[in-house]
Length: 177
Image (cartoon, rainbow, N blue to C red):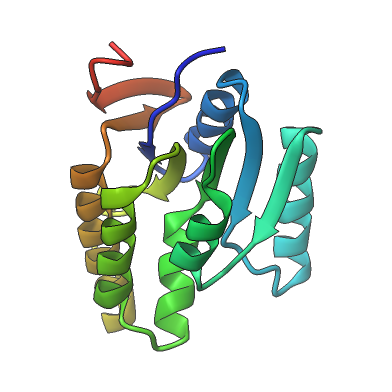
């Protein structure tokens, strides 16, 4: 068992960030809550969700919440538990598609992080390393994702970037060092 603190796990698509985040929670020895933000709107996404669930294995309680992330965290992040949020990128996409203000929701999340007493591990995509999106919506999304990642990174004690399955700690608390 290792002490777990709130951590942001960043990386590109298929970088290994979810597996790394799962290992942090699994190794903590705490009860494991998987807070899923994905919606399985088509067969391909349903298959991805099933594959993720199978790879995680037993011992996880899955809570699905595509929009009300802060409410779910308030309810699930309690003594003796570690919550894995996978992922902030899909949450942001859901917010934008529902025409909710991402900045308002991000501020709600940072207020929660300011008072959170129990560990949460967030997974998020680093989308700003590639090509500039073609569409205005794509550019708005990329910009909003970058701002969200910056806000969360500023509020948590640990930030790790995953590339090719390897962790690069960008911010590490003394407890983790």
